[in-house]
Amino acid sequence: MVLINPNYRHGFPTREGPYFHRDEESNQCQCLPAANLLKYDDRAEIHLFAPGRTKEDFSIRLDNDVLTISSDAKSEDQGEYIQQEFVAGEFSRNFQISDLVDNDKIEASYESGILKIKLPFKEESQPKKQDIKVS
Image 1: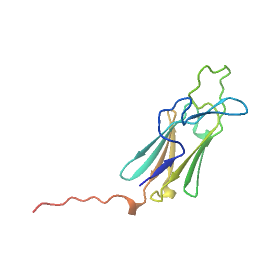
Image 2 (image 1 turned 60 degrees about the vertical axis):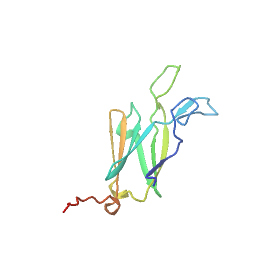
Image 3 (image 1 turned 90 degrees about the horizontal axis):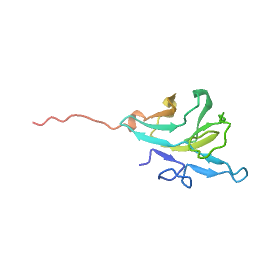
Image 4 (image 1 turned 45 degrees about the vertical axis):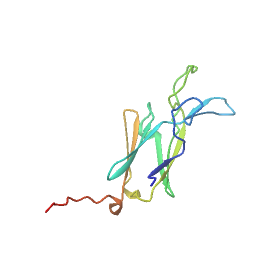
């Protein structure tokens, strides 16, 4: 069962990998922020690495079970990049959200360069646990 389906293939982020591509018009490196997807008993979480922003820089939208996280914050760096791995400009990431998630209870927070989105499961989809006594 897939709870969250990211819009990239798995692998280590390299210049040729899933997080980086060159804009054909400007030949600039366009970067997508790395994401960790976590599953707990009662929720799933998306942790998105996006340093140097404020919580107001993010736009998070859920439309037909597709969660879109975007930011159009511009980099204030004035120099020419020798190597660029941080997401310095605008980006947009999409995640397909399972119908096990309670869409009305999704929460987001931003601290220390990490955007955390909590996706609580619906009560009926949470695993039932109970202790069985041995007689």
